[in-house]
Length: 334
Image (cartoon, rainbow, N blue to C red; front, side, top):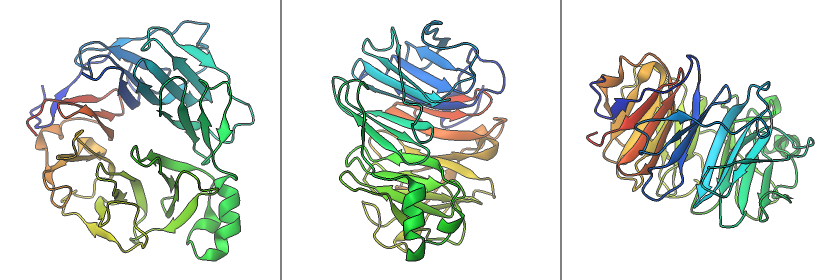
């Protein structure tokens, strides 16, 4: 067993090599939930994530011949959604007992990377890696595009506006993150050389230069509405504002001895009082002062793999997801 402050490693019924990608719970107590990954992985728990079993959705829902990568899962009460690659959308109204497959247009620009159940009775938002944002209010029978043009088109139009790196744009986001309070999105260019933001009501994504000469590895929203950035080489930057900064110099660097391991995600417990950042070679760091200073969890050094995602459903129910089927479950002493 791990001698980790964060928690314990959970044994999963998976073949080696599966990358875990997202996790979500259906109930307020966070007992019943689903865990997604590559190679068609959908696991289900009824005990708050201590034990997991494969969820069989049935042949009529998922074609066994296709090697789906399930990217994102979201619940609002008993209604839930899953999206993946090749483009697939699954929907449940009975807390995941049964799932139906919802058709997506073959003209959908990009691969769905994020789904959010934003309201009751069929209300959801879906984002693709090409920056298309779609809203539905009738359980995906109809979709409305929230952005008037692809990110490619926006950048080709604004390339003269001085966003460095836009002219090399490859056309996809490596990470997309949604602010649950405001509905704003951040999308990070897959090369890490700039990022874009979108707020409800805007017709286009807005490009932003990066603040450090180092490329951005990952970025997202904090619980207080501010923004975090992880740069390649293990730097942490936190916006001084509790919103997306207007100017790019409004970021302060956190103190972390990340020893050059890449940091890949940053998250906090549900109330935002404890921060965690994770990355290569089993790296886990925690912060008690909202990210100003960080302490390394030496107990996870023996985890042979990369850790990609921090996810908390409640202050005492949290997980770190990694490659090779690695799932760490929070035990609450960190």
